[in-house]
Image 1 (tube, rainbow, N blue to C red):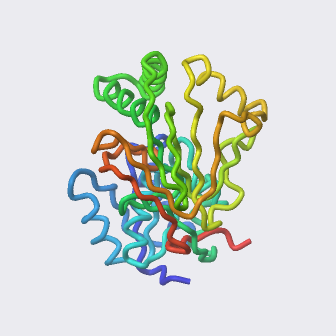
Image 2: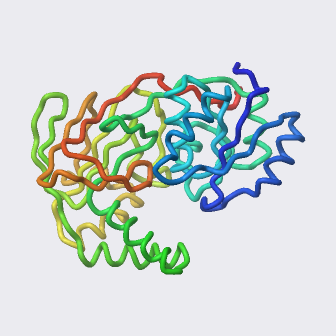
Image 3: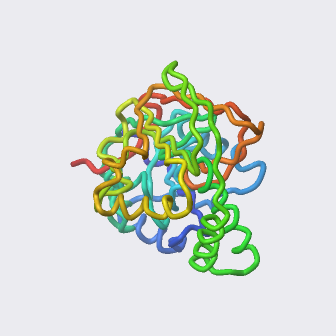
Length: 295
């Protein structure tokens, strides 16, 4: 177990269901823990600031959604420290798949009485990802949503308008991909590379039974029109997406993808970043230590 006397909570005040700093401090005190509570740094110096925080503490607690957890986890992995999570986002994919409870008191109890477990991480062009990297329609939708929020729209309204705009102006991207040294060319409205394998159908849609299987998962939507794209969520919920021969799934150790444009918009754990083509994906085994429930 890491030394819990040097504990820092990195809180995202803008997360989907941001937890009040006073509530975190009260729950920590009730669990017999003390910690510095720091707002997540933003801007060009954010990565360096997180690295400094990681160097000064043994455990960094990410209090936020998947984007917050991913940013803090990258600093933790670079410093060889330990990550803990207080899920406070909209979806909390990684925390959910790692078995971390979403209730504040229960999540903090894991910090004091949990066990360390090593997890795989994905890497694309040096950028760590815990969940997945999306290409095509998703980063375009997030860009539209963020623009609308900046103009004063609420998150739900901005998201609804952004999804509609992305669907109406559906674009496709062409990727020349090397998948474990096998070259394939695909034209698709969206491509996803995941850390581990996802459940694609039914009520468990989007979950992973095992994060650390040492493999990447590649998902390629068919090159279809708007109606075809619209049918994909319904096929998934009906438990038929994996049977849909035009929706392609491949497991691989390494993936490289080249695109026509040099700069490529990507959605890394839900956060839009622009990377340079080609995109090179790999898995780093057991690269991140995380506190999970003892049982």
